[in-house]
Length: 359
Picture 1 (cartoon, rainbow, N blue to C red):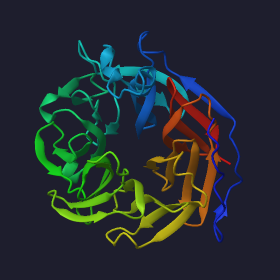
Picture 2: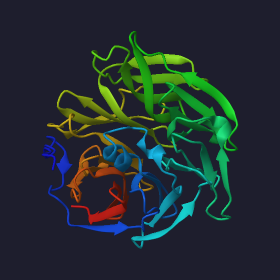
Picture 3: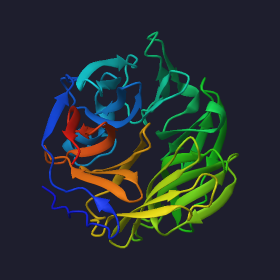
Picture 4: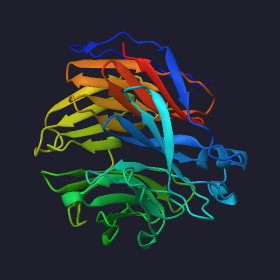
């Protein structure tokens, strides 16, 4: 088990008592008898949680940390579903084709009713939960990782292996490909994307991978214009996740030294406007990572860390922090959502969702 630090209280803020939560684990039947799938990123619509399901991590570990091991076996491709209000698993959505080998990594519940998904090694696509219709989008190519809603209902996806951002419409037509300008001696590997609807800016977190293996991996972030034009590259602080609300309020998880901050910027204002909230004064950056920020309809922001530490930010002065348990060695928490005084998070150890009371 990893020894993780307890987030420190922020002077002047109201923080709930901390401790490991008593939790319930809900599991969906295994999609395959040959591969061990687990739950990845999630999105929510009308009380239903949609989440990715992939065997990437288990396959990689079982084959000497080979990142291509998921391609060794054919397997079903599904989008998991969980009822947040009643807290039970629903039947997954089948989105595969004969011969598929890569599972679902990220999902996006689009305002038009479709659920878009990426598979990284193979094509992205979408499914309509109402009609059951499913469409794969091979013309977008491979390597698509995380998704975000872009301008006018379009979508943005990070292309990790190519160092670019794919911009496409809701029918899958590619509108643009925006390469990231990596620092000298490095290539960019973009991860999380977010679109600021008021400033018409695309924000991107990335790994900067060295061309010389002796050099360290870096973590730049990028700001692009709506048409992909480069505006800014930022080396510090490390930006681990970014999200914009529909009104343009920005949320950025930033690591600076041992401190984990949530920067909340005012709609339409610069990134340093608004409030900066200390979430952890002893953040173990070598062991933990902010995997997601989800925005609830009641205005709360939910920050999820791999380790299961969940920060529910109700206001700049009220943060409710809890830790979901480590149920299996190597298990990772991906996306958490707050429903009243309950928190439910996808857990990458089988197709699992873990729920607990908030403190």
